[in-house]
Figure (cartoon, rainbow, N blue to C red):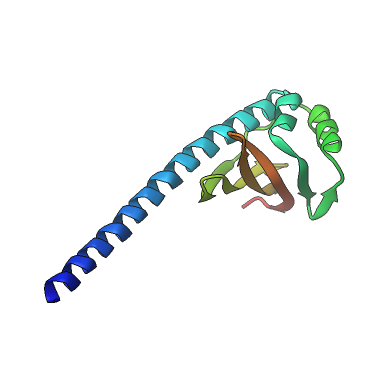
Amino acid sequence: MKTKLQLITILLLLTIVGSAYAQKSADLSVKTEIELAVAKEQNAFKNGDCDTVLSMMDDDITFLANGNKVPSKQVIGTFCNSMPRPFKTPLSDNIEVFPLTNTSAYTIRTLEFSKDDTTNIQELVTKIWKKTDGIWRITHLHSTAKEMNAN
């Protein structure tokens, strides 16, 4: 009886370890896919390829800019097309990817730009990504920018 209990315990531990390893592998795959999608979307935005930017957004995207709801993808497209380019080089730019499942993840990006000698602009951008029919799209985007002292 003691041997059976030990065998069951060992099998249970192997199952738990195997599941944890499989989840870590799946998370790494999702993280890599999201990093590629983010790069594609950001390069399209920087280069003014607004059709690509919009194609990477869900038709029912929720978009908040400084806490205000943007009414539609068309407004996002107008904004994208009206942005003066090239953009300033940010003082800092960091993105973190957090896989949730094999078909969902979120990203947090922080950027800081110099406005003038005394003021910087700090931007925080969060996005929720969902994979449908093998394609990653942004379902929720929230961008907040604020001025701060340049120290």
